[in-house]
Length: 175
Image (cartoon, rainbow, N blue to C red):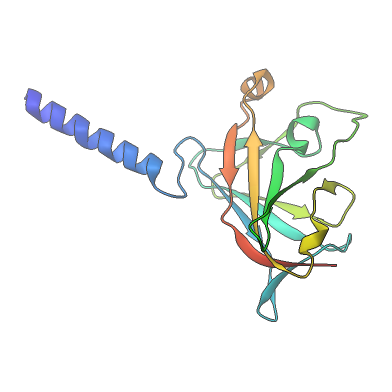
C-alpha cells in the first residue's frame, strides 16, 4: 500500500510540475495576454497617428472570476508596458507617462471566466513615452507586458498580482 501511495504522489507531482512548466500556462494566473493588429497588404501596421489605435486583450482563462486593477487609477495605470525589438535587436521599453491624480482610489474590474478586457492603445498619443523614432518604417517585434505588484491594497481587494507577457507580434511602425 505504501508503494502505491508513493507512486500516486510522484505521478501527481509530475503532473503538477508539467502543468506549471508548459508554455502559455500558469496555474496561479490563468490569463492570456495578446496583441491584435489587423493585417493590411500582408503587414501589420501600427500607426503613430494619435487618433489611431490597436488592441491588447487580456482574457481570463481560469474557471474563477479574476479581479484586475482599472487603468483609471494609479494602481492599474502603469501596469502595462510594451517591449519593442527593432532591426538591430535593440530593445525599447514603451510605458505610460507619469501623471497627476485629481481623484484616486483603488478600483478594479471583475473579469468572469472566458471574458476579456480589451485595451485600446493609442501609441502616438501623449500618454506613452519611449517610442523609438528610429524604427519608423521598419519591421519590429512588439510584446505586451503586465506587471502587477503584490501589496496590501491588492491583498485587501483580492486583485490578481503577477507578471504576464504576450507572444511577440511582427509589425511595422508608421507615422
